[in-house]
Each structure stands twice: as structure tokens, then as C-alpha cells.
Length: 140
Image (cartoon, rainbow, N blue to C red):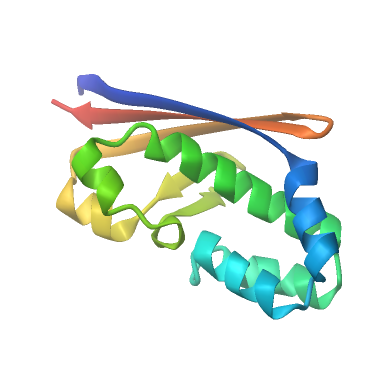
């Protein structure tokens, strides 16, 4: 049996309409949204999905992708030590779902540096609100 200790807990609450308004104000295919999404989304795991919905001009799905990624990473950031927070870049982390639909948040470089650590993520939404909770644990 593996024992774990909790290193940190982080949470974030955000309105979906926050990103919808940013997209509507600037236009989904604008340079601003392109740069904005590249700062938030991981190129390999998240940006591809965003760009697929962007090509379909699906503002709602693009907003959901940005919102869930942002909220997950904000919650994760709050679990990190100050040293790791200073090195944090949104687009180095990625939020995906496993084959069973369970959300996962990860950063391959971080996991290589801290192989005994793991981040557990849960998201919940109700109407215009989305909340994320991240638990940072370490195997001992």
C-alpha cells in the first residue's frame, strides 16, 4: 500500500462568460485571441482542440476549453511552492481527460523533476460558473 502526503490544495471559481466576452470583443479569428490562447493552452494537448473548434467558429466550445484550462491551472498554481510558482507558465501545463473521462492535469517536465508527486483534479460547473479543485500529493 502506498502512502501519500498532501502538499497543497488549490481551488478556482470562474465565469464562463468571462472568456466568451473576451472572444466576442476581439473576434475568434483575431490575432489577440490567437496569442491569448497560446499563452493559456498547451500546444501539444490543448491548443489543437481549441483550433479545431475555432475553425468551426464555435465560440461556446472555445470558451469552455479556455475556461476549464484556465481554472484548472489557477487551482494548480495555488498548490505550488513559491519557488515553483515563479517558474510556472500556463502553456507548459495541460488539462486532458483520460479514457474514462476523468480530468488530468500534468506537465511532463515537472513530473520528471518531481516523480513522486501527483496532481488530482476535479471540475464542476453550474450554469455560467465553473470551479476547479486540485490536490497536490506526494508518495512516501
